[in-house]
Image (cartoon, rainbow, N blue to C red; front, side):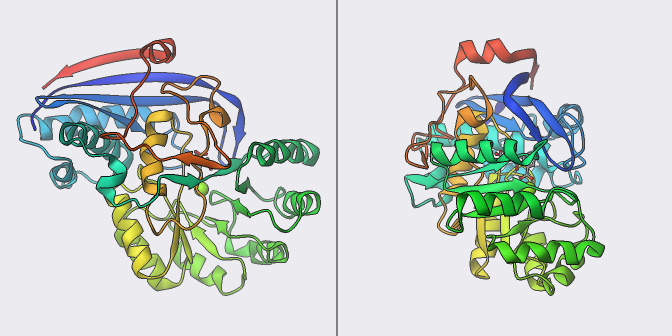
Length: 367
Ligand code: OSB
Ligand code: MG
């Protein structure tokens, strides 16, 4: 397949409610979309980097720059396959979210041309997946309980509470007291703690949580192994898992019993599948995380969520959990499940009107 051009499209979508984590409060979702044009058809990619480098070192303008300056020239004029994108970009360090967006677009184009769905291509074995929801930090416990109540009413099968020092044991206790012990419940600290907080984190053991996600710094994998010796609650890593190799090392160190897979964070859907495979080989449960994606990224994430090793509900929530209007046909929760797209490529396309409504800028680069 020959790439003949690529469109960079910046999109800004209001979130239905502010989303507060230990690292930022988001009120709008800023997105970089890529549309690759090839001699065999087009494909869409979504870059999951945020506008500011707070979750990870990548950020949207940086991704656009590295794509324009280094990644596109490296691919221009070559015969490319999706599997060939990562090897061609391998000499450039890091920038995994930028690489993932480009690989996703090429993969979408290639699978569309071949008439194969991403889910089938990756080896997914389910037509629908159970969904969880990530609930931000709130100003008060009553406000949190109202939000959780709404999500449980809607049918979400698992609740994830964002935590940080000062907002951890009490919100978890309140949710357990109000909704009972049967609710699948987990927490995500986004690196907000240190080993000095071990006693505080151990208090969470009383609440039967599925897992505690990324309590310590991204680079402190050994610290997570130490922390794991003092917690009954399984540790799940998110930020620290940047590749299948990083996953294998974290597992060998005893740093995690569960892994959150985010394709953008590991450099693409093909590496995400390898993270899944490494974890499955070690009996480590995985689930598909999210980055507040539009319907494009969500469609592709559902293919990951449908892999056999994804034994826990993911952060693959319905469109209306994020946006009043999505840029694709909306994903609608059906009895706590979302359908896994089964048509060629990622299985969805932007709706022209919605896309136009939220677009703040486009640039076309001919190759
Ligand atoms: O840590 O999982 C995270 C959103 C943005 C950045 C990081 C994270 C999240 C979420 C929401 O928790 C996941 C989603 O619903 O897309
Ligand atoms: Mg997380």
